[in-house]
Amino acid sequence: MGIKLTILGCHAATPRKDAFPTAQLLEIKNRSFLIDCGEGTQTLLRNHKVPFVKIKHIFISHLHGDHFFGLIGLISTFSLLDRKNDLHVYGPKGIKEVITLQLKLSKSWTSFSLYFHELESKESELIYEDKKVQIYTLPLDHRIYTNGFLFKEKIGERRLNMEAIGQYPEIDICDYHNLKNGKDFTAAEGTTVLKNKLLTLAPKKALSYAFCSDTAYKPSIAPLIKNTDLLYHEATFLEDKKELASITKHSTAKEAALIAKEAKVNKLILGHYSSRYNDIEKFKEEAAPIFENVCLARSGKVFEIKS
Amino acid sequence: MGIKLTILGCHAATPRKDAFPTAQLLEIKNRSFLIDCGEGTQTLLRNHKVPFVKIKHIFISHLHGDHFFGLIGLISTFSLLDRKNDLHVYGPKGIKEVITLQLKLSKSWTSFSLYFHELESKESELIYEDKKVQIYTLPLDHRIYTNGFLFKEKIGERRLNMEAIGQYPEIDICDYHNLKNGKDFTAAEGTTVLKNKLLTLAPKKALSYAFCSDTAYKPSIAPLIKNTDLLYHEATFLEDKKELASITKHSTAKEAALIAKEAKVNKLILGHYSSRYNDIEKFKEEAAPIFENVCLARSGKVFEIKS
Image (cartoon, rainbow over all chains, first blue to last red; front, side, top):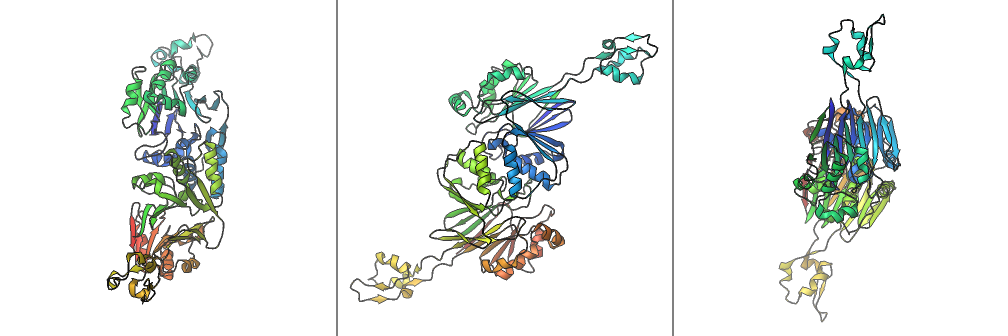
């Protein structure tokens, strides 16, 4: 178990040969979350053999084309394939209107229930929660209303210390459930009491992934993503285009590294490269002196973190 | 000179690896017309090295996704590239709302003037005309309002018969313009009169191309495309799925051939193949006994007709 992040597309602006706009698939606790959906995402999902049916939740950061023009096509394809599973779309206010208008014009109603969760808040908010995962928005600073997303595993059960348990034949397999839930062991007659910590180990570390694109340098997001295991932060430009980054409300590789350092994340992934740069290695070179554990997003690249 | 048709995408429904939805580029009389614009069309245009700036008119047959989901991305890319040339989009009523809504939501106004020509008529109508070309709608029979398009060269000037002209030294180069326009030659003093037909040849044949997708079998379109040089007619199914073709308002390869035969066109191109068929050669096999000069559309294939 752990977190598996597949980069589908990681380039800025227009799709080009071998340079696809933003889309990522996050697999966490057996759930598959699609993050952003630039034009051509459905083809990339097919190329990477991702079963469409596994995707039940889609998170759209903002309504610039390179982050959502592929959504209507993906939804239409789900319908053509006669999908029955519910689909939940989280994104800025307006996303429902634009998708439903296109479905209406094509008289193509979905074969499944489609739920929109429109976002408007400028504060971080919990937008998804189930038994094992929580997802929060990360308000970003871009030309239009934009959110990043923080995906967090919940802390799981305590793990059985089988070596310790083996020393107490009075502990039955039926007791394991209570032990995992942190309860002390009490024998049936109420005499033997063994402290839970004697028989169990701490739960596995709860992992987390933060997606931050698109955004100007915004140090105030650092506390929200403190100690995150994996951070994707946009780096559209290098410092040589710092002014352009500021005007267009994007970040440089150095600025992404400063956020990673401030937030004390474990690993930083850069992406959303401007087409101005032929050699994306330069992004890593600029970030590494500030934050050493930095990687470059590339289409098809998979990042895994084991818990 | 002549007509050059580049097939960008020619498959039905969802984009798949090496199976792109409908988009074609027609070059006629030095004009470049884009016909339909499925998801990924901008990438196909780039792959085929089509200069974006040459495209000034886009014709959308109908608002099913596999014919227009690529339009918003293409328009956005034109803007990102700081296009200045006007762009004209012809398509069913509703196309303006869906494109402008997306531009509004992304706060991405175009860098160029964008004109929509919304179509509603159920009769064939002239929708474009300049000195050399006319374009008519071809009302089709599909699940939603759909037009095909007929692109016609206008008959050009008469061609100079230089051999004949050479026999008359009194004919000056300044007289050529009048001769090309069909006027007789009269010497300055008004004495010599030479009939135009003695000095010129008939104009080159005016070529035409008809695009018919998507549509159920509709024999009433045959008179509208009579003697067309090149006809693209959808063939989503083979006769083995005739009932499905009827329900979904698509054609079989045989039906497309019947239209081509009835209209006495010169050449038929089939396309819009359903993903149910692995071997598209079968479409040609089904059509050929009825209409021999039949070809299969394939992505990247170019059809040229010389005048």
